[in-house]
Image (cartoon, rainbow, N blue to C red; front, side, top):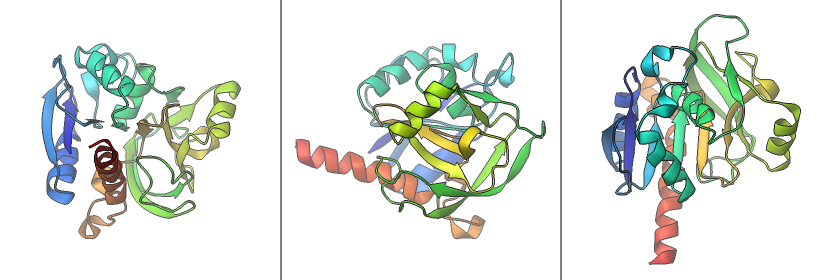
Length: 227
């Protein structure tokens, strides 16, 4: 499977994401600059964390207008796996690929620590390697991770089982403890915690590895069936 790690001016977790794919799960991966105009050769798209365009105006609000985002939207429409982590999640929200918005953390402080997440939906292409209700240890590092949406959107997320991960101890004030959600098609996941920083027990947790392995498993099974 071949992944693209999208790099925006201000991205700072792109190297972590690249390392997670290449060295930890052994798949192909390339950095793709924000002005790229073609992602057709890639099977999965990864939007890493950081501070794209310095987080000016609002986190992700400028990056969503980058040239490459037209291709990210196209990849999503084609059903390819698209994962946005932290700032990547914020960009997906700004681009309308996921519903809702991010507000400042309830404490109004930047938070950098490991959090316990609960797996709410283990039937997605991103979470099939986990079990429903499983507790996993994944780091967070954000100042604007307080997920918010209107009541109608929340009811839709709940009804369609689109809340994939929640915080056990909500660190930022997110509605319904939300840590990660998927789109209606099930192929776009946005999450504030950093699975790419939880790939090896030496660093405190390897719980993030199952997420990337789930993507690869889905892709391989799909292509075996279609072969």
